[in-house]
Image (cartoon, rainbow, N blue to C red; front, top):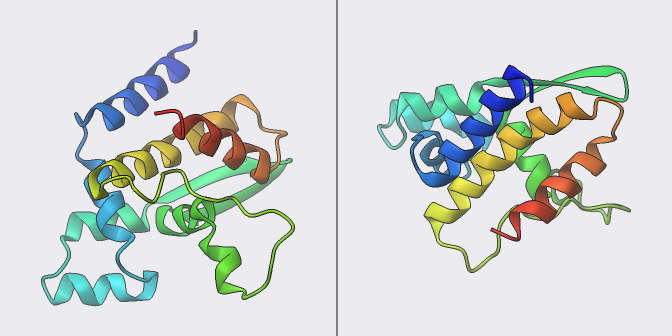
Length: 144
């Protein structure tokens, strides 16, 4: 196992064991639309750390093309909200990295873990489609 994969697996383990507070940011950011995040911070409803987390960029290589989006944007894609916003039935909908009956804490942990796995799976399989990566993530997280 190379060092990058080892560190990535440690980050994922820490996120799901609760040793990292980043899962709290993932949970909190999903309560707001992306454009409302700065106003929520100004109003004191959201921490500046959550805004920083949500606006952090994740850059992937999808079938040879570089794609950069914020964590909030990737989270919406993983959860299937991008397709719902289009008000059309997509041929493929990512679904949820968590169950509806999961607690808010568990949802935050699973979403943060999904974002970490999106990066690590992409590095391991740079020729995979985005749909394949997200399907693999969601399939694995349902078992947790």
